[in-house]
Length: 108
Image (tube, rainbow, N blue to C red; front, top):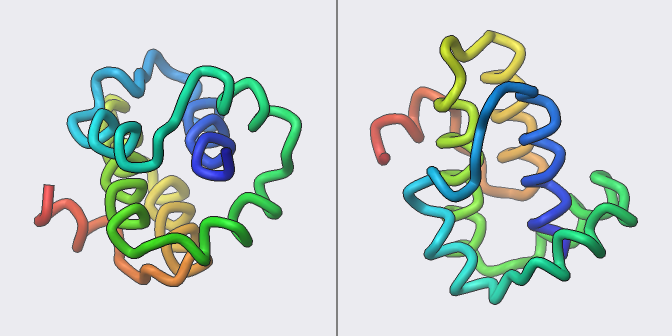
């Protein structure tokens, strides 16, 4: 559910026509984290800060998949802003998977 809250926040922040379904890594994240539609509904009741605290303790492979999915959501924008790049870096540091937007772009 915490992963869902973070993904919902990113989708809302981007505000453009972005889709988790178009994200190449989301299906793997969904499968490994066993995310359901109900998780997204429940996630809307949780704060992002509490979610970051919970995600900090998940397995690094899930952190990697979440990072790749968030990167892909931002990359669906016509232009990725400096603010979005900084936000991505702050999120990754907050969950103890420190990687920059430019570093992850070489992985995906």
